[in-house]
Image 1 (spheres, protein in one colour):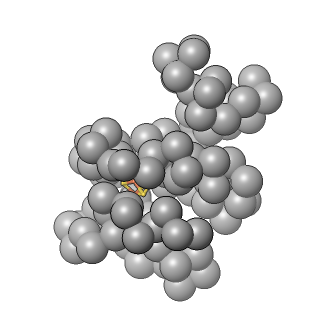
Image 2: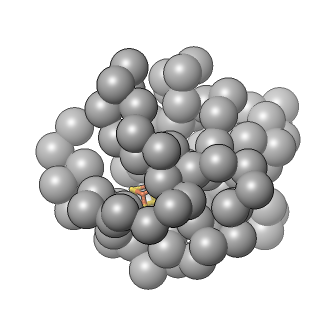
Amino acid sequence: MTWRASAACLDSDTDFFVNSTSIGRGHHTRASEAPALKLCGVCEVTTECLDYALAVPEARDFGVWGGTTKGQRTKLRRQGGGHHALHSTGV
Ligand code: SF4
């Protein structure tokens, strides 16, 4: 997952990131979705991050990934799409 080296959240030490040893990247807590989503908005690897989150259950069902919340990813999965569906439906 080389895209992680370019993640906007990679070196973030703000309080909305919680370390995860199981996945090896930062997670965002539900209470802090807004600032996490704002950071995703300036991230260069949002597409790669979302694709990963949709493919990996440990990521898919927790926190903010690729500019989406858990609820938004659930909706995307039901629609059968990834980042392409995200941008075409405005999720
Ligand atoms: S899209 Fe968001 S969660 Fe994913 S790497 Fe970028 S900043 Fe982190």
